[in-house]
Amino acid sequence: MTVWLRRLRQNFDSLSPAARLVSVLVLLLIFLMAARTPLDPDMWWHLRAGQETWENAAPYTADTLSYTRAGAVWVNHSWLGQLSLYLSYRWGGFFGISLWVAALAVLSMAVLLVQMDGPLGLRAALLVLGSLVAATTWAPRPQMFTLLFLPILQALITHAKITGRDRFWLLPPFFLLWSNLHGGYSAGILFLAAILAGEILNHLLDPASPQVLSWPRLGRLAGWSGLSLLAVLVNPNGLNTWLIPFQTLDVSVVEIDEWFSPNFHNLNEQPMLWLLMLTLFALALANRRADGGDLLAVIGFGALALMAKRGFGPFAVVALPPLSRALWSAWRAAPRLQSLLARFQSPPTPQAPWQKAVNLTLVGLIAAAAWAKAGVVSHPTVVQIYTAQQYPTRAVAWLGSQPRGGHLVNSYNWGGYLTWAYPQQPVFIDGRADLFGNEIMGEWLTLVRTQPGWEDLLKKWEIRWVLLENGTPLVDALQTRGWPVRYHDAQAVILEHP
Image 1 (cartoon, rainbow, N blue to C red):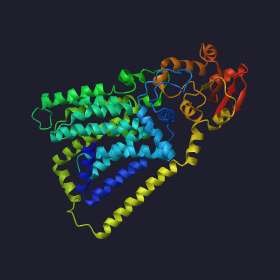
Image 2 (cartoon, helix red, strand yellow; image 1 turned 45 degrees about the vertical axis):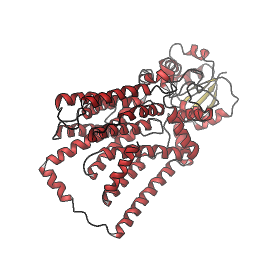
Image 3 (spheres, rainbow, N blue to C red; image 1 turned 60 degrees about the horizontal axis):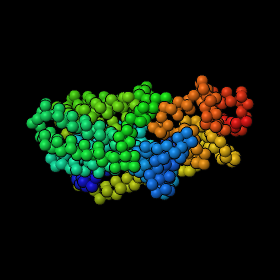
Image 4 (cartoon, helix red, strand yellow; image 1 turned 30 degrees about the vertical axis):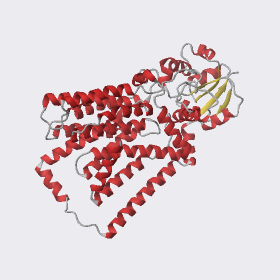
């Protein structure tokens, strides 16, 4: 990490004043894109888990937020990331969370900017496109660490190939930290697998290339990668850490939007398609054979992104460096494009004294605007307004005023919010699909849809309260059986066992 921060500083110092200005402005633009009202549905239970870790001074790994899984072991792969998120809230409120998200997004894109090839204008344009793709996965959740650690891993491998100096020994401690911050460490393992397979392909097709890892170096990379897979076990979850990538994928009862394939009829999802097409086109157009690792990584992560929207961010991160290298290679090989580039290049001229003041003023104004935006979108009043639109804030306030007792059936979409806003009442279900699995999620669906056996589940779980959206089949069925409506508004309804 220190090596790449130093390289970032060296690269920045070597830039012309105009290039420095463009670099800073692009990163500020990314900050503006990433600073949003922090209202992701899963943010709430991540915050609550981070709070439990902080208050108990130990990783939170046994469920206390629900009554359907009370006391069960929870493979909490993001305990350290949750702690980071909670501390940002503890010290800065929702403004702290907005800064947390924006800072991690900017850091990840800055690491990518260092790795990319070509003129700064080309790199800046590609970085904006990549940010449009990755922005769909920028959220107040620990997955932000995966979007930062993946480009750092890329940088480490690229540095080894370009300079011939290996620092593969950094991989085990790197993955140890990653696996405690977020379960997306598996994306890093997949990336290493693509690099190892790609280097074998390079040896078969172009062994004379100076950037192909020699067999001894490839062996060292494989060895340290294997040790990295063992290092992720240095984790409160132990051997269960290896199962993390498969647990959420195994849940098929409830449909989770981020695991759906993209719908490219939606404009906000189309940048992923543009980036994929541009990358494949550039790799085909380049005047040199595509690096095997780049090719396999782009294909693999591209396939994952086409299968699930959750893969947009990792794909953008993986695709940008090889895309820039391929485009710049093709550009340099085309004489007409070279002459076109030369027309727009002017010899460096000394910077006028007033120019630096103008640049600093421009940067200061945009930085102030970015900071102001983060403050506005995370202001308690704004957060309260948006929260009331998405979650049953008034219904929860009413419920909190009533004597406690009995279990609650809640909406899946509201479960995470309830764990944070009404912590004294354990939920039936929330967004932790890996914890509840098909069994509990199936029972929840049976209940809310009044499928055969739903009345037995009411008795099994000793349900006293129901908090669901208006028009839910369970609400209508219980009303016909004499359950009185205790609270009702345009958003939610609360029923109590008679």
